[in-house]
Length: 287
Image (tube, one colour):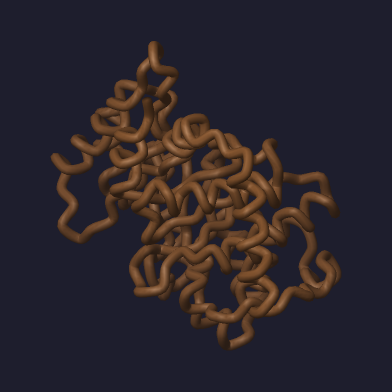
C-alpha cells in the first residue's frame, strides 16, 4: 500500500459535469493562447515526447532506427533538444538502449499485458521485471479495465501496487484507457486508484482503440493530479498518448498542463507525450 486504501477519503467529490468540461477547456485554451510563445512551446513539446513504436511487426532494425532518430534532433546552436524517451515492447528495450548515443534519453517499455491488461498478475509482474532487467527506465502499464468496470476497485489498485513494486527504480506510468472508461466519474476514479496505487504518472491511452487521448479526459486527470498535490504536496506526472500527431493538437495539451498545473509541470520529469509521428512535425516548425 502506498498512500491510502480508502481512496474516497483522499479526494473531494468531483463536481464538474460533461457540460462543464468543454467550456472549461475552451476558456483555458483561449487564455493560454493569448501569450503563447509558440517557438518556446515547440521546443518544450519536442523534449516531452516518448517516441513510440508499438506494432506487432516491430523488428530490431526498426527499434534501432527509432533510437537513432531520437538522438537526431538536438542542436546546441538552435537550442533544440532531443526527445525524452523511446517507448517499445519489452523484447526491444535492450536494442534501443544499445543504440542511444544520447544517454540522457530514456527507454520506456509497455509491460504488464499491454494493451488489454488481461493476464494474471503473476504474468504481468514477470513481464515488468523482465523489461526492467533489459534496461527500461519507465514502465507503461495498463489497468484492468474489465475489473474496474465490474467495480473491483480494490483489485485494480492492488495490481498497480504489485507492478509498482516490480518496477524497482523504474518510473511507473499507469494507462487508464479513458476511451473504454467513457464517463467523467470513471476517469476520475481510475485516476485516483492509479495515483494511490503508486503511479508516478497517469496516462490517457494505449493508442490501440478508436477513442484515444481527448482533452476532456486529460482535464479530469489534471484536476485529480492538482487536488492530490494540494492534499499531499506530491507531484504526479501526466502523459497524453494516442492520436496526438499534429503540433497544433500537442499545443492544446501543453496549454492544459500549463494553465491547470502551472510551469512546475512543464518538464519531462512530470509531462510526457506519447507519439510516433509528432516529433518530426514539431521539429520542422522550429526556427
